[in-house]
Each structure stands twice: as C-alpha cells, then as structure tokens.
Image 1 (cartoon, rainbow, N blue to C red):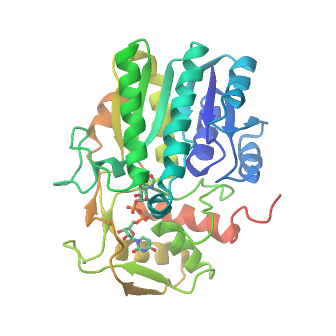
Image 2 (cartoon, protein in one colour):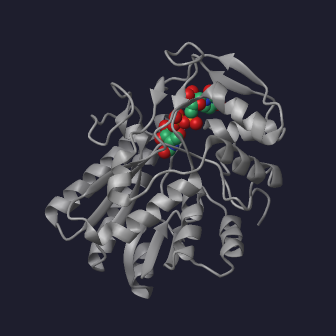
Image 3 (cartoon, helix red, strand yellow):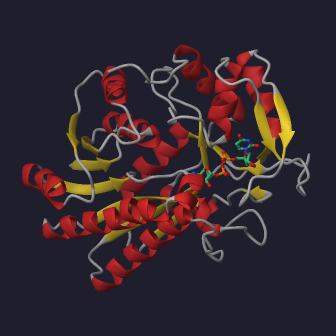
Length: 339
Ligand code: WQD
C-alpha cells in the first residue's frame, strides 16, 4: 500500500510520515520545500532507520504530479501541502487560493486520472470562524474569516462536490485545532520561517533566547484569565489521528469530517506557565493589543473522532511543552543553515 504524502517534509507531515512507516505503510513524500527543509526528511529517516522516497515538485504543476503516479501505484493520498499563515493570506490572498485551492484541484484531477480516489485532507478549525459556543462539533456553522481559512473551506467544498460527482471516492476531512510539540526524540519539530505567527513556537524561541519577549495579544477577552483560549494538541497525537483515519478509510461510505482536538482549552497565560515549568526557563511577556481576527475561545468536542476513528488525544499539556522544549533547545535555529 503506497501512500502519497503531499507536504510530507513539513511540521505535521513529517511527524505523520514517521508513524505511517512505523505502522507498516510505504510512503512517498511530495514536497516543493517552500515551507519545509530537506533536513527534516533526513531527520525522519534517522528516526525510522530507513530511507524515504521524496519527489520534489509543486502541486500546481500537473507534470510533477503525473510523474509520481506514473512511477508508483498510489492507494491513498494524505494531503498536507499548502500555505498556512493567516496574516500573510490577508496580504496575499491570490497566493493562497493558487497554492491551496488550485493545487488541491489539480491533485484531485491527477488522482482520478490514475484511478486513485482515496484522500485524507488537512483541514483546520479555522473553518468554524467564531463559534457561537464551545466545545465545537463537526456540524457547527462554517464561516472562515480570512483567505487562509476560506481556502481550507473551499477545498472541503471541492472534495464534497467530487464525492457527489463520483461516490466511489473515499474522502476524510480532518479539522485540526492547534498542533504543538514535537517527536519525543527532539530531532524533528516545528520550524516556522521568520518570526513565528503562532503562540507555541514564539514561546519556545523566547525561552531559548531567540526572542526578547512574547507579546500576549490581549488580556481582555471573556475567558478564565482574559487571554485567548485554544485547544492545543500534541503533533504526535495529531499524526496518530491520520494513521487511524487511513486504517479505516475504505470502510466509510460518505465524506467523513472529523475534529482532531483534545477537547480541553488552555489560555495563553496557562501555556506560558506550562512552558516555563517544562523548560525551567523564564518566558518574558508583555500584554499587547488584540490581534485582528482572533477569537476568544476555540476548542473541540472530539467525541466523533473517538466514535469513527477510535482516536483520542492522549498527551498532556506538560508533554506538549516538554517535547517542544527538547526540540527547540536541541535545535535553537530549527533546520536553518543545514543544507
Ligand atoms: C493562539 C493564541 C493568540 C501568538 C492559527 C490558525 C489555525 C491553525 C493554528 C493552521 C491566540 C495568542 C499568538 C503570539 C499571542 N493554523 N498569541 N501571541 O490563531 O488559534 O490558530 O494557528 O491550521 O488555522 O488560525 O493560533 O498560535 O496563532 O494563537 O498572544 O505571538 O495565542 O491571540 O489566542 P490560532 P495561534
């Protein structure tokens, strides 16, 4: 069973590749390395003690994709490849629609051409917008508030339409909450380009001395301590959710949409304290203005994932911070500078 993992050199992709191979799947990685390093593949090979076939290419290039399906009989695709910076998507929406939406449409066309009609798509809780209540269920209203979120929602709609046109497709949409942490070895982890947009890499870089202090974007939300509350989920738990989905995809008779979250919400200040405990380092912070587009509270109801994927997040906030700190402290500059 060959599995094509688009974006397999990225943060979530690389962690998922490790678990797929450990579960006995044969993996082909397809990546344009725009947002990922070839070093992450070398690190994954070290963890699993075997080489991985990597095809460098761009989803928008039909010939790049066809070369994969010409060479390999792919049974399923796990589709991570895409741009994911909310702020950048507001400044450059067409870049996001071209990469994330057009790229996904080309992928589906080429898959169908080679009779590969099985896909797990990396979606996001951002498609829920500002939920009317929490915890969030999969049938909540969908309303993206930025081009990145809209690109995820558009791809979900494209996949639902593909299924209506041909119900032999097997499609699972996994809606991630906030992935954090790293593989326990500390050899792979999150390595954002430039100044991190997301909380945890910024906290980790502050703890390791790369950033002077963290700006806490608002402490006047209607939450336990006034700071934003999110459902942080260990990236290895998230990866396990993909393996469970792949194990079961042939059983499903319709498009399956599943939240991958812990069902618990933690505030920014709670995350700072947890990371200080894990790293034994002080994380300096200053209260700043709210960030445009942020919502107060977002966390999952993960019961459907347990029902249909037999999956439940197991790792604690402390483990997320300990594993994230091990990666950051062993790799202060991530994969940067390693050719
Ligand atoms: C978390 C909390 C911020 C940075 C985004 C995407 C989502 C997904 C995860 C891709 C919020 C606060 C953050 C900082 C802060 N990505 N914060 N200072 O916004 O929940 O979700 O990333 O799929 O789609 O929307 O994550 O980590 O950016 O923010 O105070 O420097 O931390 O206000 O409350 P978010 P985040």
